[in-house]
Image (cartoon, rainbow over all chains, first blue to last red; front, side, top):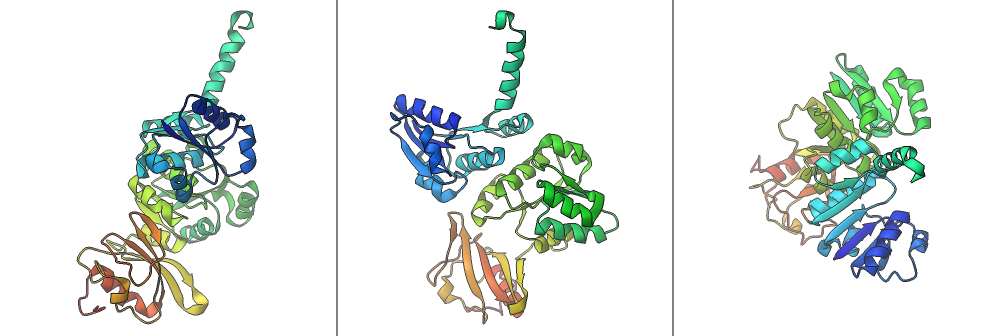
Length: 136
Length: 227
C-alpha cells in the first residue's frame, strides 16, 4: 500500500517504521525536520518537510495515488482539515485521523473519517488498570 | 436572534462592533487566546468569552443549542472548517458562515457543504443582510488610499466572459485580474487563461468598474463589456 503519514511524533514515527517494515510505501510529512530523528535507522520511506494541510505538500507526498492517509499531527483541527482534503479532494480510500477531543472524534467519525481519540482510549486503559486484579 | 462569532481577530472584532448596533441580536464572541480575549472584553464586555470555538463541549456551554447563526472567522482554516461542521452537524444550527483564509481551501469547504463562505467582515455583513439573491461581486477588501477594492466574482454560464481568454476581454481601465480559482486550484492568470463557468476571479478594481464587470461575469447587461 502507498501510505502518507502526516506528523512524525511518537505515533507517526512508530507507525511509519512499522509500515515500512511491512513493505508498504511510506511518506512521512512533518513541519519540523527535527521530528524525523524519531524514525529508526531502518526506515526506508520518504521524509518531507511541510504541512499536511498544504495542497502542494500533499501532492508532493503523492496523495493523488495514495491508498491510505493517516493524520497524527498535534492539532485536532489540522488533522481533520488534512484528512477531509485527502478524502474529498484527492479520493484517498482509507483515511485515519487522530482527534484528541472525544466528542470531535465521534462527530467526524460519523461524517466519514476513521477517527480515534487517544484521550478516550487513555481513559479506558487507565480505568481498567485501576481496577485490574494484581495490577495486571 | 442569538449569534456566536468564533474568532476575535480583526474580522471578529469588526463584526462584533457592527452586530452590537443591531437591537434584536444577542452576540457571543469566542476567542482562543486568553490575552486577546481580555483585551476584547475591556472594550466589548461580557459578550466576549475565552475558549476553543471548535470544541463541542465549550460551544455547548455558551448556548450553541439555541444559536441561529454561527460565524467562524478565525485566521485558521482548520478551526473554521471544524467549527462550521460542528455547528451544522452536531448542533444543527440553521445558518453557518465561514471564513476561508487560503483560497485553495475553498473548494474543500464547498464540497463539505460549508455553504456560506466569505473572506472578510464586509462580506460577512453582506451575507447576514442577505438582501441580494445572488452575490455576483463580493467585496473582500478595500484599498482605501488608492480608491480600489479587491473583489471576488464567479463566472456564470452564458456570460460574456465564459469561454474567453483574458486577452480577448475588454476590461475596464484599471482592472487587475489577480487570481483565477478553477476546480484544479488557484492560478496566476495571463492573457491566455480561459475563463470557465464556475471559475472564481479575484480582482483589484476601481469602484466605477463594478457594473461593467458584473455584466461581464453574469451576462445581465449585454450592451456592456463587449469582447
